[in-house]
Length: 370
Image (cartoon, rainbow, N blue to C red; front, side, top):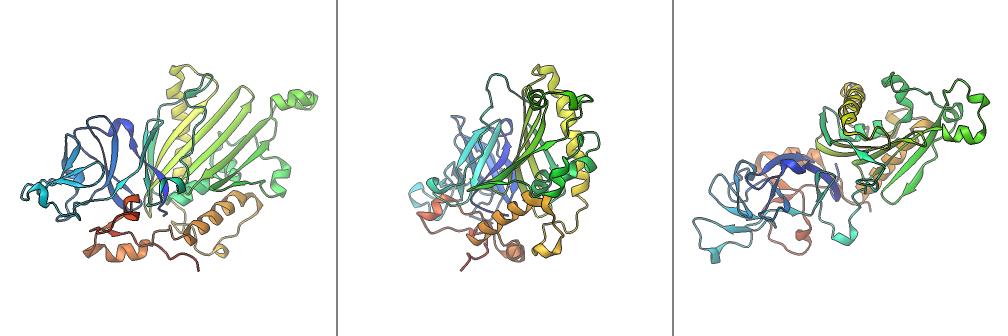
């Protein structure tokens, strides 16, 4: 799991002004709440006084109140009130990590890391959101008993569809696709591909080249960072799906997915439920399979699996993960879990770059490459 990327924390509707919303991401407990102006805030869920969960407390004005001794923390993470201490005597160390927030698509996102704003990887933009001719289904959130890297790789794997999704896995792959590597288009934070599928029209051989293009079926996937995946499905020039998966690793064995489905047809609201049900049926087929993978996580050694040309997107993804690990952004979960008994951790926030004297230890990270 990696720090220094944007992660979905909660549905916008679940982040309120009267109580903190408690959630686990990257193996760490976080809280989300709104201030009196409606701004969302994300904090570490550990009171630095005696270790209580702030998420078990409540929101008072613009502060979250610890349920153990009543300490109050503002949206910037600083403690502003200790019932047993004069305000002028509140220790400078009385602060918890607070993370940058973006709220889009009905989702509250947090940047979980310490990079300054100008260096942060992007939150993927859904350019067609709210545009005429497109409709977004209601936001769907679901969880699966699988490691998020396995989930992302599943979405980047075009060769599994006709086997895992028998109702949706046709048309079949083009013969050329079976013989050559995926044509990956790389970017600084990810990569993408697009492939064509066999035209299933009975009279396709009689179609002109122009007509064939109009009926061409294409599909592709891409990823941005370790946890944002996009799928493009073009059934025809007038029937297009764009699907966005913002994934939150809960821990090493569980993943929470925020799914935004965009479409250019069947735009009437009454079609939403039907399409959501279809999407969830397809997702369940993946969930059932991913829960059985062995090992649970992706292998550390590439030679522990036999990869073939159609796994090009998976290979690309793993290469990016290796790069981010070499930057020193990968959490050392084995060390973290071994020390949890007597030590509380936090994902380091940007303020740690400019101020010291923090109580909570930053999550242990693998060292940068020499």
